[in-house]
Amino acid sequence: MAVSGNMFDGTVAVVASSGTSVEPVLEIPDNCHTVVILNPDTTNTVLVQLGTAGGAIPAANAAVIPPSATLSLVVGTLSQRASSGANLIFDTNAGAVTAQLIYVNGVSS
Image 1 (spheres, rainbow, N blue to C red):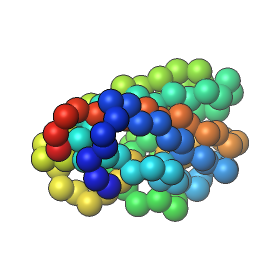
Image 2 (cartoon, rainbow, N blue to C red):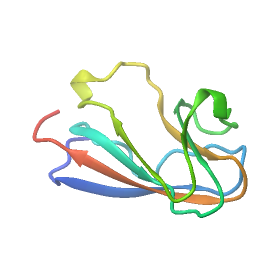
Image 3 (cartoon, rainbow, N blue to C red):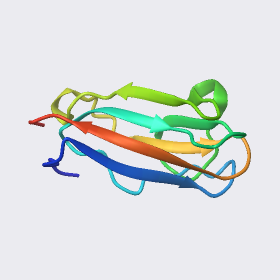
Image 4 (cartoon, rainbow, N blue to C red):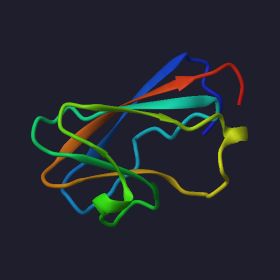
């Protein structure tokens, strides 16, 4: 992406059905250091992993966000991140979920 001039940026990851991972609508800004992820669903679990969107995310290899819970994920600014080329991707254990993300940004990348 690019450096964001905002302290916080919000976006969503809309998972239409389990087994079909997706990327968030907005990419992580270069100067984002923490991603806060809310699972607003009261029934389904959100699964988060680094990878390429499209396939299922096995729960054993993911960060698991239970129903009505949040996860704070420290990613570091762009210059501190591993250069894996992978993105955050999202899936669910069942059903459809719209995960809500808040990017907490610093002043530099």
